[in-house]
Image 1 (cartoon, helix red, strand yellow):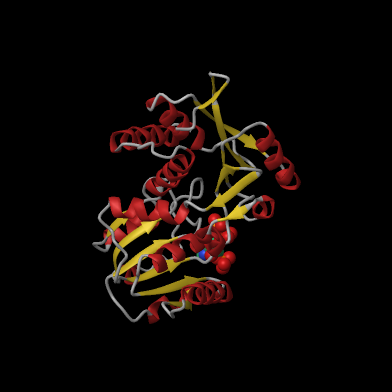
Image 2 (cartoon, protein in one colour):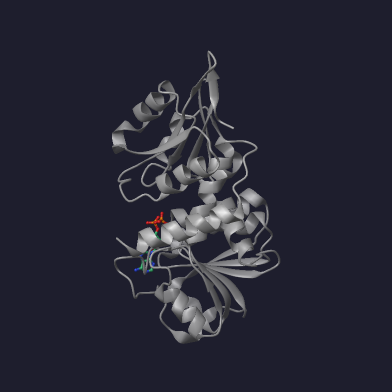
Amino acid sequence: ISLIITNSAPRIAISGVIGNPVGHSLSPMMHNYYGEALKLDYIYVPCNVDDDKVGEAIRGAYALGFEGINVTVPHKQRVMEHLLEIDDAARCIGAVNTLVRMEGGYKGYNTDADGLYRAIMGHGINPEGKDCLMIGAGGAAKAVAYMLMKHGAASVVILNRTMDKAWTLAEEMNRQFGRETIKAMALEDYGKLEKEHYLAFQTTSVGMYPKVGHAPIEDTAFYKKIQTAVDIVYTPAKTRFMELVEEAGGQAVGGLDMLIYQGIIAFELWNPGVIVTEKMVDTVRQMMTERLNNR
Ligand code: ATR
């Protein structure tokens, strides 16, 4: 537990999130709730940091005694040059979203891939041995691709509007894992997909609030090939992509649990030994849903 005793007086453990903007971040609500529910002397604060101030912010947070820091858009890559160490998964994904304090500075982790894995396993979705497809090849797609490689997907096709980016991501991951699991395909070529019953991941921001009602592929024939799908978008709770999957008879899961579990893994890194219970997860899911519905 990250309660620090100095001269026998308890000190509040501080952590927070840096990003630009961070005003709408749901992380403070999540983390402060866990701290309260677990009766820890713990506080989590959102900090807006300009793009050219990331290094200063990290050094300042260290000086101020921050135990941990989450890093969100657009600083997930930029922050990497200001860290003492970087965990292997974060290096492979090429982005850091969680900093853990150590002697002299911070170590960087990426909890997105593990967060996604815990979220889907919680819905009974196991990628092991599955034929998978991904739509998109941006920052979020990297964590998805890494998770699928780590957990033994049989095959992965990355569909992306810009074919080059899909190809680069596929090549990078295949090289890191030493096997040719991932193939790249242009988004418009979805008709050439060879398999059926895919486990699909929608990793683009298409369909995200406020531009709801859109999906990267609208053709119902495509959705007949999908058995189970995960949209990493969490607002709206049911995206157009999810609707299309369900209309074709598949199971669709939204991105809220990925957001929740990446936060829990960060919280666990900062508070070793602490257990966030399923009941607490349910409460947080409800709180976040209400917040998203009320904005
Ligand atoms: P993030 O870091 O959130 O993943 P990103 O790196 O900007 O964001 O990546 C966005 C992804 O969404 C990309 O794969 C992008 O496709 P391109 O590589 O062709 O740009 C994809 N994307 C964004 N808008 C799209 C649209 N209207 N249709 C299809 N794909 C789209």
